[in-house]
Length: 368
Image (cartoon, helix red, strand yellow):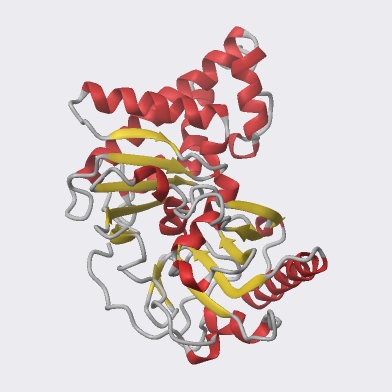
């Protein structure tokens, strides 16, 4: 759990100047009250090393679906065929609900109900923790949210929480979850660092994918970044290749370089700023102190490895200047994309249903 951390500090000199610290608690529009919250799972049959959030991840949904399929009589035909649950894509699950036969739809709906119950339990525990107390709304992102199955699970969990007397609103994150982790990076840095530019590079590193994009803040349409958009993006599913850490970094830099060249060719003026979303607890110097175990190649916690510094040194100059790289936790960044819609609240949160269950809680700053 990250409740209180270092005060904002100068960025790394190699990154091009003074700016907020990596993993900063105080951001331009919000104070990050908590992120990467890791509550031990005390439930029946729980893994002694497991965390409560593991019960509401994409892997958990696959396990629930596996259990339901295993309970079917051997004489019955499995509605999903021979494909392991973890390999059944979101499109197939969505289609099962929309136009599958009764047995297929019933199986998926049963999995949604069981998963929603687990999700509601996890959120209830979060709301009782110090950093989450008083959250008035929670935005739910992550890969599972990008499907009808995920939306139904979120909606059902919202109803379950209401029936338990929990008044916190629960809803899918507004942006496409594949873009929210990029767009949220615009909220990591003061607006003046992006003013006068058409866009900047954003990076979202996850347990299965790496996504790089050019984000356009579009201050001319909305100064609060509510109209920010991902202009062009590139996706690499590293889970299919199992690359080393070094190969991952090289591929990431190549993706960013290609997008920078394309943006400049089309006349976009990019800010010399790169916002990075990455799993784990992010220290002020840009190191990952824990929580990066799902990242490709392993050893992202190594004392001598610093992702922001490595990127700053490897990326090309933008507009004749060395780039400033600023990194925060991926759930924090994805949640920040929702910040303009949470302006009227005092405190709110975000969870991301992906390889793990990312989480972050925020207080709006009075001056925002």
